[in-house]
Length: 358
Ligand SMILES: *[C@@H]1O[C@H](CO)[C@@H](O)[C@H](O)[C@H]1NC(C)=O
Ligand SMILES: *[C@@H]1O[C@H](CO)[C@@H](O)[C@H](O)[C@H]1NC(C)=O
Ligand SMILES: *[C@@H]1O[C@H](CO)[C@@H](O)[C@H](O)[C@H]1NC(C)=O
Image (cartoon, rainbow, N blue to C red; front, side, top):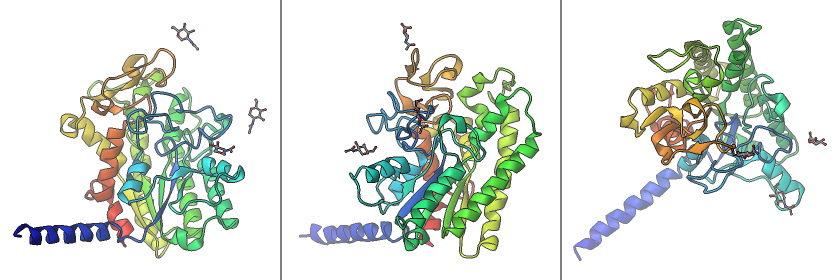
Protein backbone atom coordinates (compact mmCIF):
# COMPACT_ATOMS: atom_id res chain seq x y z
CA UNK A 1 0.00 0.00 0.00
CA UNK A 2 2.92 2.27 0.62
CA UNK A 3 3.70 2.18 -3.07
CA UNK A 4 0.36 3.57 -4.11
CA UNK A 5 0.95 7.28 -3.33
CA UNK A 6 4.23 7.06 -5.22
CA UNK A 7 2.43 5.63 -8.16
CA UNK A 8 -0.12 8.43 -8.05
CA UNK A 9 2.60 11.06 -7.88
CA UNK A 10 4.32 9.37 -10.77
CA UNK A 11 1.16 9.32 -12.85
CA UNK A 12 0.55 12.99 -12.06
CA UNK A 13 4.05 13.87 -13.14
CA UNK A 14 3.56 11.91 -16.31
CA UNK A 15 0.33 13.78 -17.01
CA UNK A 16 1.99 17.14 -16.33
CA UNK A 17 4.91 16.29 -18.56
CA UNK A 18 2.64 15.38 -21.44
CA UNK A 19 0.55 18.53 -20.96
CA UNK A 20 3.69 20.66 -20.92
CA UNK A 21 4.98 18.97 -24.04
CA UNK A 22 1.79 19.90 -25.86
CA UNK A 23 1.48 23.37 -24.34
CA UNK A 24 2.98 25.29 -27.24
CA UNK A 25 0.65 26.69 -29.86
CA UNK A 26 2.89 25.63 -32.73
CA UNK A 27 1.28 22.72 -34.53
CA UNK A 28 2.99 22.88 -37.87
CA UNK A 29 6.30 23.67 -39.46
CA UNK A 30 7.48 24.90 -42.85
CA UNK A 31 11.18 24.29 -43.59
CA UNK A 32 12.81 26.19 -46.48
CA UNK A 33 16.37 25.67 -47.64
CA UNK A 34 18.79 23.19 -49.17
CA UNK A 35 20.14 19.65 -48.66
CA UNK A 36 20.58 20.19 -44.94
CA UNK A 37 16.76 20.08 -44.62
CA UNK A 38 15.54 18.41 -47.85
CA UNK A 39 13.42 15.35 -46.87
CA UNK A 40 13.06 14.19 -50.48
CA UNK A 41 11.86 17.09 -52.63
CA UNK A 42 14.57 16.43 -55.18
CA UNK A 43 13.76 12.72 -55.14
CA UNK A 44 10.20 13.55 -56.21
CA UNK A 45 11.39 16.01 -58.86
CA UNK A 46 11.84 14.38 -62.25
CA UNK A 47 15.03 15.38 -64.05
CA UNK A 48 16.65 16.78 -60.92
CA UNK A 49 20.26 15.62 -60.97
CA UNK A 50 21.14 16.39 -57.34
CA UNK A 51 19.99 13.25 -55.53
CA UNK A 52 20.65 11.11 -52.48
CA UNK A 53 17.91 8.56 -53.08
CA UNK A 54 20.16 5.52 -53.18
CA UNK A 55 21.89 3.38 -50.54
CA UNK A 56 23.44 3.88 -48.06
CA UNK A 57 21.66 7.24 -47.56
CA UNK A 58 19.04 6.91 -44.81
CA UNK A 59 20.44 3.57 -43.66
CA UNK A 60 20.89 4.43 -39.98
CA UNK A 61 17.41 5.67 -39.10
CA UNK A 62 14.97 5.09 -41.95
CA UNK A 63 16.69 1.86 -43.08
CA UNK A 64 16.13 2.99 -46.68
CA UNK A 65 16.97 5.99 -48.86
CA UNK A 66 14.36 8.76 -48.52
CA UNK A 67 16.09 11.45 -50.53
CA UNK A 68 17.67 12.94 -47.39
CA UNK A 69 21.36 13.76 -47.77
CA UNK A 70 22.43 12.02 -44.59
CA UNK A 71 22.28 8.63 -42.88
CA UNK A 72 19.15 9.50 -40.87
CA UNK A 73 17.14 12.49 -39.69
CA UNK A 74 17.96 16.11 -40.47
CA UNK A 75 17.92 19.08 -38.08
CA UNK A 76 14.40 19.89 -39.33
CA UNK A 77 13.29 16.33 -38.53
CA UNK A 78 14.63 16.52 -34.97
CA UNK A 79 12.94 19.87 -34.37
CA UNK A 80 9.69 18.38 -35.65
CA UNK A 81 10.07 15.52 -33.17
CA UNK A 82 10.80 17.90 -30.27
CA UNK A 83 7.53 19.62 -31.17
CA UNK A 84 5.76 16.28 -31.00
CA UNK A 85 4.82 16.31 -34.68
CA UNK A 86 5.04 13.85 -37.51
CA UNK A 87 7.94 14.63 -39.84
CA UNK A 88 7.04 17.10 -42.59
CA UNK A 89 6.66 15.48 -46.00
CA UNK A 90 8.26 16.95 -49.10
CA UNK A 91 6.07 19.41 -51.01
CA UNK A 92 6.79 17.57 -54.28
CA UNK A 93 5.58 14.25 -52.90
CA UNK A 94 2.40 15.79 -51.48
CA UNK A 95 1.70 17.62 -54.72
CA UNK A 96 1.92 14.37 -56.68
CA UNK A 97 -0.22 12.48 -54.17
CA UNK A 98 -2.92 15.13 -54.46
CA UNK A 99 -2.66 15.17 -58.24
CA UNK A 100 -3.03 11.40 -58.51
CA UNK A 101 -5.76 11.20 -55.89
CA UNK A 102 -3.92 9.22 -53.21
CA UNK A 103 -4.29 12.23 -50.88
CA UNK A 104 -7.10 14.75 -50.48
CA UNK A 105 -5.55 17.62 -48.56
CA UNK A 106 -2.20 19.01 -47.53
CA UNK A 107 -1.37 17.84 -43.98
CA UNK A 108 -1.85 19.87 -40.80
CA UNK A 109 1.73 19.45 -39.57
CA UNK A 110 3.27 21.56 -42.33
CA UNK A 111 5.23 20.95 -45.50
CA UNK A 112 8.92 20.97 -46.34
CA UNK A 113 9.96 23.00 -49.38
CA UNK A 114 13.72 22.51 -48.92
CA UNK A 115 15.53 21.41 -52.06
CA UNK A 116 19.08 20.07 -52.05
CA UNK A 117 21.63 22.06 -54.02
CA UNK A 118 19.51 25.20 -53.92
CA UNK A 119 20.70 28.59 -52.88
CA UNK A 120 19.56 32.14 -52.44
CA UNK A 121 20.76 32.92 -55.97
CA UNK A 122 20.29 30.76 -59.04
CA UNK A 123 22.97 28.32 -57.89
CA UNK A 124 22.52 24.86 -59.47
CA UNK A 125 19.28 25.96 -61.15
CA UNK A 126 20.33 23.96 -64.24
CA UNK A 127 20.20 20.77 -62.11
CA UNK A 128 16.41 20.92 -61.68
CA UNK A 129 16.44 22.05 -58.04
CA UNK A 130 14.07 24.65 -56.56
CA UNK A 131 15.87 27.87 -55.60
CA UNK A 132 14.56 29.66 -52.52
CA UNK A 133 12.40 32.01 -54.65
CA UNK A 134 10.69 29.01 -56.24
CA UNK A 135 10.13 27.45 -52.81
CA UNK A 136 8.39 30.67 -51.75
CA UNK A 137 6.26 30.61 -54.90
CA UNK A 138 5.24 27.03 -54.14
CA UNK A 139 4.20 28.10 -50.63
CA UNK A 140 2.30 31.15 -51.86
CA UNK A 141 0.46 29.13 -54.52
CA UNK A 142 -0.82 26.79 -51.79
CA UNK A 143 -2.10 29.78 -49.82
CA UNK A 144 -3.69 31.39 -52.89
CA UNK A 145 -5.50 28.14 -53.64
CA UNK A 146 -6.70 27.77 -50.04
CA UNK A 147 -4.67 24.64 -49.36
CA UNK A 148 -3.10 26.33 -46.32
CA UNK A 149 -5.21 28.31 -43.88
CA UNK A 150 -4.15 31.73 -42.59
CA UNK A 151 -4.63 30.67 -38.94
CA UNK A 152 -2.38 27.68 -39.51
CA UNK A 153 0.40 29.97 -40.76
CA UNK A 154 0.00 32.25 -37.74
CA UNK A 155 0.74 29.30 -35.43
CA UNK A 156 3.50 27.73 -37.48
CA UNK A 157 7.23 27.62 -37.10
CA UNK A 158 9.20 28.63 -40.19
CA UNK A 159 12.74 27.37 -40.70
CA UNK A 160 15.17 28.96 -43.12
CA UNK A 161 18.67 27.83 -43.95
CA UNK A 162 20.28 28.74 -47.24
CA UNK A 163 23.49 30.22 -48.58
CA UNK A 164 26.04 27.43 -48.24
CA UNK A 165 25.67 26.38 -51.90
CA UNK A 166 26.03 29.98 -53.05
CA UNK A 167 29.18 30.32 -50.97
CA UNK A 168 30.67 27.04 -52.22
CA UNK A 169 29.76 27.97 -55.79
CA UNK A 170 31.60 31.29 -55.46
CA UNK A 171 34.79 29.44 -54.52
CA UNK A 172 34.59 26.87 -57.31
CA UNK A 173 35.43 29.63 -59.72
CA UNK A 174 39.13 30.37 -60.22
CA UNK A 175 38.29 33.96 -61.10
CA UNK A 176 35.13 35.04 -59.26
CA UNK A 177 33.35 37.96 -60.88
CA UNK A 178 32.65 39.71 -57.59
CA UNK A 179 34.59 40.64 -54.48
CA UNK A 180 33.73 38.33 -51.58
CA UNK A 181 32.00 41.17 -49.72
CA UNK A 182 29.85 42.00 -52.76
CA UNK A 183 28.79 38.35 -53.00
CA UNK A 184 27.76 38.33 -49.34
CA UNK A 185 25.84 41.57 -49.85
CA UNK A 186 23.94 39.94 -52.69
CA UNK A 187 23.04 36.93 -50.54
CA UNK A 188 21.89 39.04 -47.62
CA UNK A 189 19.62 41.11 -49.88
CA UNK A 190 17.84 37.92 -50.89
CA UNK A 191 17.42 36.85 -47.26
CA UNK A 192 15.79 40.23 -46.58
CA UNK A 193 13.37 39.52 -49.46
CA UNK A 194 12.64 36.06 -48.08
CA UNK A 195 11.83 37.44 -44.63
CA UNK A 196 9.67 40.18 -46.21
CA UNK A 197 7.79 37.56 -48.16
CA UNK A 198 7.27 35.11 -45.29
CA UNK A 199 6.08 37.81 -42.90
CA UNK A 200 3.77 39.31 -45.54
CA UNK A 201 2.25 35.83 -45.94
CA UNK A 202 1.60 35.73 -42.19
CA UNK A 203 4.66 34.03 -40.67
CA UNK A 204 5.16 35.06 -37.04
CA UNK A 205 7.88 32.68 -35.88
CA UNK A 206 10.99 32.33 -38.02
CA UNK A 207 14.15 30.44 -37.10
CA UNK A 208 17.06 31.45 -39.32
CA UNK A 209 20.14 29.27 -39.35
CA UNK A 210 23.64 30.40 -40.18
CA UNK A 211 25.99 28.57 -42.52
CA UNK A 212 28.44 26.06 -41.01
CA UNK A 213 32.21 26.05 -41.50
CA UNK A 214 32.09 25.21 -45.23
CA UNK A 215 35.84 25.66 -45.40
CA UNK A 216 36.23 22.48 -43.34
CA UNK A 217 33.97 20.05 -45.23
CA UNK A 218 35.59 17.05 -46.97
CA UNK A 219 34.47 18.44 -50.36
CA UNK A 220 37.08 21.19 -50.08
CA UNK A 221 39.37 18.60 -51.72
CA UNK A 222 37.37 19.41 -54.87
CA UNK A 223 38.89 22.89 -54.76
CA UNK A 224 42.60 22.21 -55.29
CA UNK A 225 43.24 25.92 -55.98
CA UNK A 226 42.29 26.82 -52.40
CA UNK A 227 44.87 26.27 -49.66
CA UNK A 228 44.00 24.32 -46.51
CA UNK A 229 45.52 25.69 -43.32
CA UNK A 230 47.37 22.79 -41.62
CA UNK A 231 46.43 23.87 -38.07
CA UNK A 232 42.69 23.96 -38.72
CA UNK A 233 42.39 21.56 -41.70
CA UNK A 234 40.12 24.21 -43.19
CA UNK A 235 40.15 26.76 -45.95
CA UNK A 236 40.17 30.20 -44.40
CA UNK A 237 38.89 32.07 -47.45
CA UNK A 238 35.66 30.09 -47.46
CA UNK A 239 35.25 30.33 -43.71
CA UNK A 240 35.83 34.08 -43.80
CA UNK A 241 33.00 34.49 -46.28
CA UNK A 242 30.75 32.27 -44.15
CA UNK A 243 31.56 34.27 -41.02
CA UNK A 244 30.81 37.54 -42.79
CA UNK A 245 27.50 36.18 -44.09
CA UNK A 246 26.56 34.86 -40.65
CA UNK A 247 27.31 38.21 -39.02
CA UNK A 248 24.95 39.93 -41.45
CA UNK A 249 22.27 37.28 -40.87
CA UNK A 250 22.41 37.89 -37.16
CA UNK A 251 21.92 41.60 -37.70
CA UNK A 252 18.82 40.83 -39.75
CA UNK A 253 17.47 38.62 -36.97
CA UNK A 254 18.13 41.32 -34.38
CA UNK A 255 16.15 43.81 -36.48
CA UNK A 256 13.14 41.58 -37.04
CA UNK A 257 11.08 42.62 -33.95
CA UNK A 258 11.47 46.30 -34.89
CA UNK A 259 10.94 45.88 -38.61
CA UNK A 260 8.05 43.40 -38.34
CA UNK A 261 6.10 43.99 -35.12
CA UNK A 262 4.68 40.79 -33.69
CA UNK A 263 7.19 38.57 -35.50
CA UNK A 264 9.62 36.55 -33.40
CA UNK A 265 12.84 35.13 -34.68
CA UNK A 266 16.07 33.50 -33.69
CA UNK A 267 19.48 32.88 -35.16
CA UNK A 268 20.88 29.34 -34.98
CA UNK A 269 24.65 29.42 -34.56
CA UNK A 270 25.58 26.45 -36.76
CA UNK A 271 29.12 27.69 -37.32
CA UNK A 272 30.02 28.21 -33.65
CA UNK A 273 28.46 24.91 -32.59
CA UNK A 274 30.24 22.92 -35.29
CA UNK A 275 33.56 24.48 -34.33
CA UNK A 276 32.88 23.45 -30.73
CA UNK A 277 32.42 19.85 -31.90
CA UNK A 278 35.64 20.02 -33.93
CA UNK A 279 37.61 21.49 -31.05
CA UNK A 280 36.69 18.67 -28.68
CA UNK A 281 35.49 15.71 -30.75
CA UNK A 282 35.57 13.11 -27.95
CA UNK A 283 33.38 15.15 -25.65
CA UNK A 284 30.70 15.20 -28.36
CA UNK A 285 31.02 11.54 -29.21
CA UNK A 286 33.10 11.88 -32.38
CA UNK A 287 36.17 9.87 -33.37
CA UNK A 288 36.62 11.66 -36.70
CA UNK A 289 35.74 15.26 -37.54
CA UNK A 290 37.69 15.74 -40.77
CA UNK A 291 36.78 12.91 -43.12
CA UNK A 292 33.44 11.76 -44.46
CA UNK A 293 32.07 8.42 -43.27
CA UNK A 294 31.08 7.55 -46.81
CA UNK A 295 32.72 8.45 -50.11
CA UNK A 296 36.00 8.00 -51.94
CA UNK A 297 39.29 9.82 -52.43
CA UNK A 298 41.13 12.02 -49.93
CA UNK A 299 38.95 12.64 -46.83
CA UNK A 300 36.28 10.62 -48.72
CA UNK A 301 35.63 14.06 -50.20
CA UNK A 302 36.07 13.42 -53.89
CA UNK A 303 33.03 11.26 -54.76
CA UNK A 304 29.45 11.32 -53.49
CA UNK A 305 28.58 8.56 -51.05
CA UNK A 306 26.85 5.59 -52.66
CA UNK A 307 28.35 6.07 -56.11
CA UNK A 308 30.59 3.48 -57.68
CA UNK A 309 33.84 2.95 -55.84
CA UNK A 310 32.75 4.54 -52.55
CA UNK A 311 32.85 2.92 -49.15
CA UNK A 312 30.97 3.53 -45.95
CA UNK A 313 32.53 3.58 -42.48
CA UNK A 314 31.48 1.03 -39.89
CA UNK A 315 29.93 3.42 -37.39
CA UNK A 316 28.54 6.65 -38.91
CA UNK A 317 27.87 8.21 -35.51
CA UNK A 318 31.64 8.34 -34.91
CA UNK A 319 31.86 10.85 -37.75
CA UNK A 320 30.95 14.51 -37.94
CA UNK A 321 30.56 14.22 -41.72
CA UNK A 322 28.42 11.65 -43.46
CA UNK A 323 29.38 12.45 -47.04
CA UNK A 324 31.54 15.02 -48.78
CA UNK A 325 29.13 17.90 -48.04
CA UNK A 326 26.84 16.79 -45.26
CA UNK A 327 26.94 16.02 -41.55
CA UNK A 328 25.83 12.72 -40.03
CA UNK A 329 22.59 12.28 -38.15
CA UNK A 330 24.67 12.38 -34.96
CA UNK A 331 25.88 15.89 -35.80
CA UNK A 332 22.37 16.99 -36.78
CA UNK A 333 20.98 15.75 -33.48
CA UNK A 334 23.56 17.68 -31.46
CA UNK A 335 22.80 20.82 -33.46
CA UNK A 336 19.03 20.44 -33.19
CA UNK A 337 19.20 19.82 -29.44
CA UNK A 338 21.38 22.91 -28.99
CA UNK A 339 18.95 25.09 -30.97
CA UNK A 340 16.04 23.63 -29.04
CA UNK A 341 17.12 24.26 -25.45
CA UNK A 342 20.65 25.65 -25.59
CA UNK A 343 21.92 29.01 -24.32
CA UNK A 344 22.72 32.09 -26.42
CA UNK A 345 25.92 30.47 -27.69
CA UNK A 346 23.60 28.11 -29.62
CA UNK A 347 20.56 30.21 -30.49
CA UNK A 348 19.94 33.90 -29.94
CA UNK A 349 18.24 35.96 -28.67
CA UNK A 350 16.12 32.97 -27.60
CA UNK A 351 16.13 29.23 -28.28
CA UNK A 352 13.54 27.28 -30.22
CA UNK A 353 11.72 26.14 -27.12
CA UNK A 354 11.19 29.77 -26.12
CA UNK A 355 10.24 30.71 -29.69
CA UNK A 356 7.45 28.16 -29.85
CA UNK A 357 6.21 28.82 -26.32
CA UNK A 358 5.61 32.55 -26.75
C1 LIG B 1 12.86 15.70 -68.36
O1 LIG B 1 13.72 15.11 -69.33
C2 LIG B 1 13.06 14.55 -70.44
C3 LIG B 1 14.07 13.83 -71.29
O2 LIG B 1 15.22 14.59 -71.44
C4 LIG B 1 12.32 15.66 -71.20
O3 LIG B 1 11.64 15.11 -72.28
C5 LIG B 1 11.34 16.34 -70.25
O4 LIG B 1 10.74 17.43 -70.89
C6 LIG B 1 12.03 16.81 -69.00
N1 LIG B 1 11.03 17.25 -68.04
C7 LIG B 1 11.13 18.39 -67.36
C8 LIG B 1 10.05 18.66 -66.38
O5 LIG B 1 12.06 19.17 -67.50
C1 LIG C 1 0.84 9.02 -56.40
O1 LIG C 1 1.99 9.81 -56.20
C2 LIG C 1 2.86 9.37 -55.16
C3 LIG C 1 3.96 10.39 -55.02
O2 LIG C 1 4.66 10.51 -56.21
C4 LIG C 1 3.36 7.99 -55.47
O3 LIG C 1 4.20 7.53 -54.42
C5 LIG C 1 2.19 7.05 -55.63
O4 LIG C 1 2.66 5.79 -56.01
C6 LIG C 1 1.23 7.59 -56.69
N1 LIG C 1 0.05 6.77 -56.71
C7 LIG C 1 -0.51 6.37 -57.83
C8 LIG C 1 -1.73 5.54 -57.67
O5 LIG C 1 -0.07 6.67 -58.94
C1 LIG D 1 31.69 0.31 -61.18
O1 LIG D 1 32.97 -0.17 -60.83
C2 LIG D 1 33.24 -1.47 -61.36
C3 LIG D 1 34.57 -1.95 -60.75
O2 LIG D 1 35.46 -0.90 -60.64
C4 LIG D 1 33.27 -1.39 -62.87
O3 LIG D 1 33.52 -2.67 -63.42
C5 LIG D 1 31.90 -0.88 -63.36
O4 LIG D 1 31.93 -0.69 -64.76
C6 LIG D 1 31.55 0.44 -62.69
N1 LIG D 1 30.19 0.81 -63.04
C7 LIG D 1 29.84 2.02 -63.40
C8 LIG D 1 28.41 2.24 -63.69
O5 LIG D 1 30.64 2.95 -63.50
